[in-house]
Length: 317
Ligand code: T5A
Image 1 (spheres, rainbow, N blue to C red):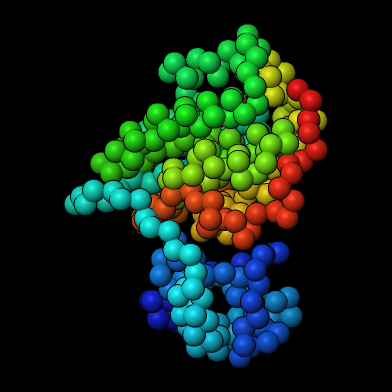
Image 2: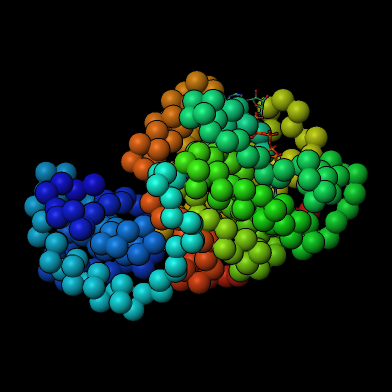
């Protein structure tokens, strides 16, 4: 984050490719504004410094950009679609943080989530939650004891989240941190990888809270498939997992566009190496304190959804 700026404006420097790039009027060749994020905080803007703008130039560049950013933000946030925060009852307690760990099958999520739960003394939630009536139907499907239509099972995964969301909000409200092993992003990525329309995949989870951070354990399907017990469940096939990984990368981009905080973590190291990174990022979120919670919102993400509504090529399971 750039220093020496008034507290009403925070500048997040992003690297890499971004959608919806707007050149900064007064500083051509220095930076592009990527997007304003009314979801995060009023006065937050993401900029991308162009490659020719070297590190030493960063301070001056950001200061000279200030005015154009302010006028650009005013214009864009006035016309921008603004979702309302989720209504949490007013409380004197600082709310807990909602931390989600995502990844392919066998990427090491449960191993890291257990550590994180213990480290933060957090509530542990796992999706699918197989102990409920809906969860037992999902379990039968995943373990191939029953067959369920792709649309129907997607809705079951969603329903399984909805039946627990209220109690998650209550925990957050009481000030308890919540760590989720998988979340709606798995729902979107896995069903989209089967070839169902993307906005349909998102729709059934619209309204659930966007996490304070999503930690995506990135592991190639070949390495994951060499791990213990791989192949026991329905989706544990390398060709399909490859499509899911690609789908997750896309989900990352439109969730970030809508203001979600998503961190891709190399999960190929030892459990201890992965843990060091997880601990650092989760610690940042908890120590900075969570902000308002916003609902997952198809309209906010729509400008960033991929051109084709088709998922990756239909996979056979
Ligand atoms: N699904 C889920 C949907 O389609 N839609 C949805 O909405 C949701 C929520 C079940 C399936 O449901 C799908 C996705 C899944 O296909 P699950 O129960 O979370 O979801 O299944 P898995 O992802 O397979 O969960 P696992 O517990 O089996 O795998 P994890 O949690 O990723 O991995 P973990 O920690 O259990 O580790 C697996 C093995 O690797 C070792 C561990 O010791 C263990 O043996 N390991 C490591 N080895 C080397 N290096 C490391 N860093 C390691 N970390 C762990």
